[in-house]
Image 1: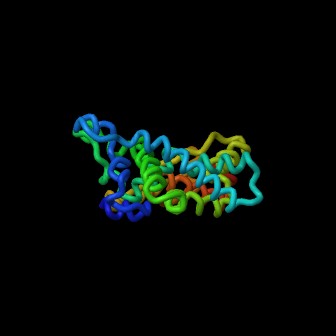
Image 2: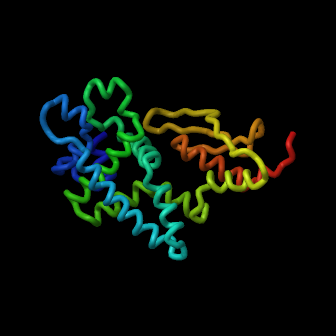
Image 3: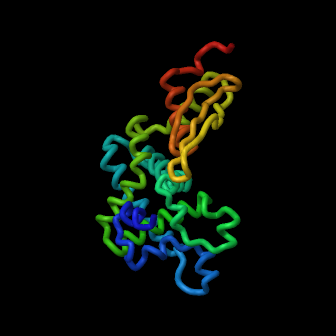
Amino acid sequence: MRAALAELFGIPEDAPHFLQALTHPSYANEQGKGQDNQRLEFLGDAVLEFCCSELLYQRFPDADEGALTRMRARLVNADALADFARESALAGALLLGRGADSSGLRESTNVLADAVEALLAATYLDVGLEAARAACARVVEGGLAELAVSGGRDPKSELQERVQAQGHSPPTYEVVDSGGPDHERWFEVSARLGDRELGRGRGRSKRQAEFAAARVALEQRAWQAEEP
């Protein structure tokens, strides 16, 4: 599992900072030795922001500063990073203390997002900036594809704007189905306006499924249909 994760981030499994990037403070405290991943998370946050900004600058040459800032916020927030971690089965590779593990922190959004950023810092420190650039591109690849399809717009935000412009309350999202093993979970979500379904979408996380459902609703302009 850790070997596959190291390959995904472009870092040798025996690199100096690899295991540290996977070490939660609870494990370091419990063992009474070694360093946790919090300092690496601090650096990785900056590495990710720089590399993501560079990618967006190149990918969307006509976008202004405000649009680029909004797109970056969509790509590098804790939920997006945790989604990537879940898709990559990163949770199983984490080193957590027994108490933290039993309390469910292994699946915590913040814990997973911190680990992704720490791994990016480890890649930067142990392999170099070009490897970190490539790793960052893999982390945000799914989000970038969504941005390309939507022209840089967030489909959930756009749907909410259009629905409210028609005098309706904001749409809601409901998980209607899910399945798959832990490392390949999928979710099906319904975008709803009151009792009416506007669209359905699937994704490897609830967030991705919500975006897919919003995109279907936008394509079908379902909120303009007459009330039943």
